[in-house]
Length: 328
Ligand code: ADP
Ligand code: MG
View 1 (cartoon, rainbow, N blue to C red):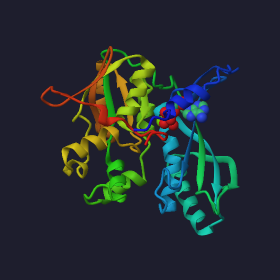
View 2 (cartoon, rainbow, N blue to C red):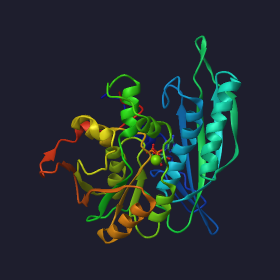
View 3 (tube, helix red, strand yellow):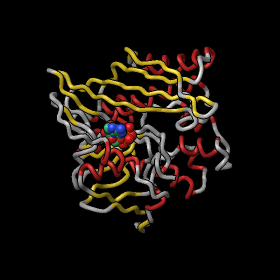
View 4 (cartoon, protein in one colour):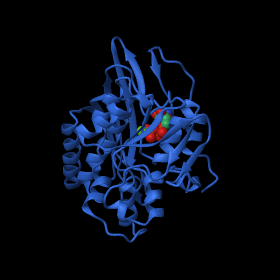
């Protein structure tokens, strides 16, 4: 790990300006800012992605288009909102029509699937750095509508259960295999989890019905994103290291790799959330009906974060630190 400040130190020190808003609002610190406009509550998020950083340099442009929007919709899901509209600012090294055609196709697929309209944006040429233009980068701002109380990362209470949706770790495993760092076989299911994340939009909306006390989406790693909930809520957690549901493919990998992928790997776009034990049955029923696995992975405690295995033995957690753009 490097010694430079983390992404989150930078946000605290340089981007928390403290200038108040004239609208009732909540932000910075959650997956979305929440704005109250008249009788409407809006959830707003913005995320940047760049080829060679968030995507492999030769990523399929259809995948780039689809995933660029899907990751923003995942933040809208974490707030429990219904996706409505988005804006796209894109910076291109050249007007490559064949790349753009496929990119646009992927973007449209996600927009149609989640019923979210593109209302504006900006198109520019990327800057020259030395002899070459920097790779394509894009920023999407997405707006959703919240019916009821928006979910935030703050509100987890001591005694709450901790849950995660889906199977985490698959996207990370696919990345490790594609970059040659792991030599297990790349199955189609793992590749799809990396290329076509499923923002848990319906689950997020369900959780606003007095179920979840706090929620975040898993973009940088389950442990790290859960830690955001813990920090914002001022609590700790006891975690059962092997409790998150594992996919059939990742389940065949060696235990240490599987654990690392599940807790430290990013790019899953599942929801991690806390809820009182009285909600267990409702959550289990929802998971069954919608065929989305919901795993109970631990409990909120007063302080500290500790991992336990099936024999109640404590497992060191340092290796589960997630992704940070400024630490290498
Ligand atoms: P996410 O992973 O859901 O996109 P992060 O955990 O990266 O969110 O960001 C934490 C919080 O910091 C969010 O509320 C985000 O809006 C805010 N944030 C990140 N970068 C900036 C910035 N440059 N200026 C202001 N707020 C920022
Ligand atoms: Mg997020």
